Amino acid sequence: MTRRALVVRGGWDGHSPEAATDLFVPFLQAQGFVTEIETDNEVYADADRMAGVDLVVQCVTMSEISGPALAGLRSAVEAGTGLAGWHGGIADSYRASSDYLQLVGGQFATHPGRHPDERPGDASDNYLRHTVNITAEGRQHQITAGLTDFELDTEQYWVLHDDLIDVLATTTHPVRPWHPWHRPIISPAVWTRLWGAGRIFVATPGHSPEVLADPNVRTIVERGLLWASRTESE
Image 1 (tube, one colour):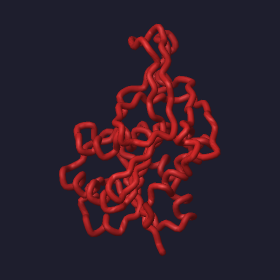
Image 2 (tube, one colour):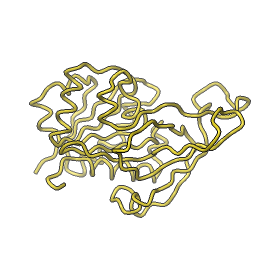
Image 3 (cartoon, one colour):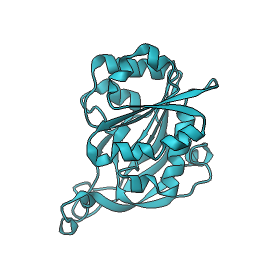
Image 4 (cartoon, one colour):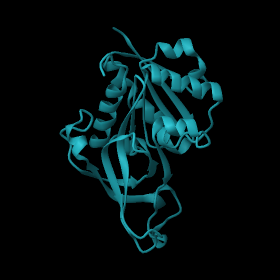
């Protein structure tokens, strides 16, 4: 049976939405998906079209979403359409919409920066060497099974989240002299969420195509896309 993936991309150009999603379109096609690409999230308001979508891959940082489009996305996921993405393309979308935040279960708050004396004034100001730790649940989950803790030198997302997510990997923000918090903060780095008959997958690494090409990150995203796709089980 043919599966259909809808790639919705746009928003802030700093996350390279076209280049980032282009990394995974061939993978989806090799897995038997017919892929369609849209640059306008109003596609979510088309109920007939969304009913035939097995997986939404969203890469839209910040931006806005209309009421009908958001209602359409929520309805589609509740009915079984999968929703998946990485970094700001899913965890920092539509900041003004509380209903979207509830759907996804986690929201980017910040990415702590380097020491002020070590900031050249570009995107790397917020690149920190950090570890992504696979949780006990993650060691058993098909998305992250067989993976071990790994390090990245990129943005480390601080995420506000709720208890309905299943956390497969975390990252810890340490206490540094130039930051105002007083104890380490653990943030989810990879999570899943069940919503009605639908599945949601989020990975916070993915600031650039180079990060997405990291073997650990790419493996997690590819597995997450497949896991989130509409399924008759569960």
